[in-house]
Image 1 (tube, rainbow over the protein chains, first blue to last red):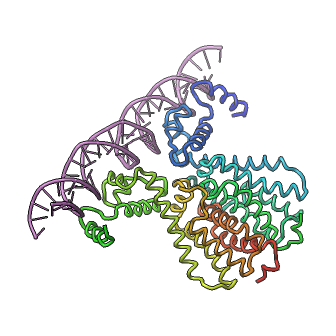
Image 2: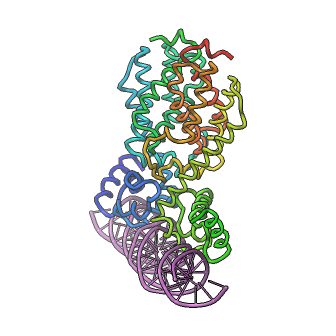
Image 3: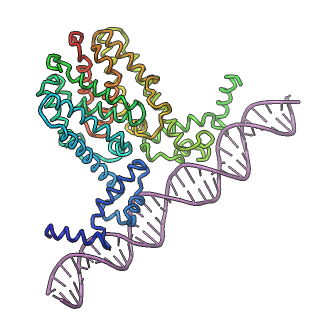
Length: 213
Length: 213
DNA sequence: TGTACATCAGTGAACGCGCGTTCACTGATGTAC
DNA sequence: TGTACATCAGTGAACGCGCGTTCACTGATGTAC
């Protein structure tokens, strides 16, 4: 079947009896409902209703409710990575200044995402969706962007060689933890910028000569 | 009513018709069920059944299900703080070495808690229980212990004055984030000790002279 | 010490509801000739 | 181009269930005299 064929079929189908891309529509609807009501409280029937389809139709695309939720989780991780990619694209350049801005912006984007949509953040990190390849963070886009950022910071002499080793780990965990603690009300929102300042300073540990402005 | 009176009444009651301390028993049972099945999936009826009491009895002690869950959350925070207190008590002394060990043990206890009982950890930080006084972390026991640890590290010259300022924030967020990311399968378990190493190094940033072994 | 009574801590039935999942089905669509 | 047929993408009714919450109640307990 040619691509053209697929496209034509979709277009025609969408207007009539067949939905066209029900799978994607279900994921989007589920995402929207999670956003509004939280990851617990998501119901299959509500998702189907939102799309305007019978509950049983869902089972043509997902074996059960959990796998639908997992797919929503997958999409959220992709969305977050895309958001970070766009943020980085706004700050080009190989200067130390640009590298520093990119590093902070990467963290801010992560936090902003969490803070703006707490329920989506909870779905991602609250044990609702299974991680397919455990611990395989290396392969994911967001992690690669962080690695690139840290490499730039090292190359431009902003951070120390000795701290570079812990760069991804310390940055990711601190930003993740701050996001959770702020979202859940354990820390005030302003704490996030403080944390970025702390990370800036921390990442210079080991050779202060290179850490000058 | 005297204390003796209360105690006697409790003892007698427990054996007969009246439960004696149903409120605490319900919280314990709820905690146990959350531990097994996760914070979503907790049902009032199951809690009542576990205690051996009718579902409606719960309403003599809690206005609704959510407030029971919140009470479980409160207890968990207290339990964690107690566990940390006990861990610190095992490492007395005012030496730099003791201070360093206490600092690491504080983080490890937090992580061990999360890793051993993921469902309880999810209840605490997954948006299931309302925080009564938002952002009032200063008052809580665990935070005070962390502050004390960091003061000791500063006094013994292990960490820098400039990083001391960010001590609580950076330590708490990093440990919290690492716990979440490891529990949820985004990072391998071994990453936690790496993180502690990274934090040790980071906290010396600003004046390396003081950071010598 | 014994009795009458108020209070207290629970019961048990019922409410209305929404849930995930199954199943046989139907009507639209695409395809072969 | 027209027709017969297979396939595909949905429907809708039903299943059995467990849920949170309410309400009138009852039997045990504590208290006053």
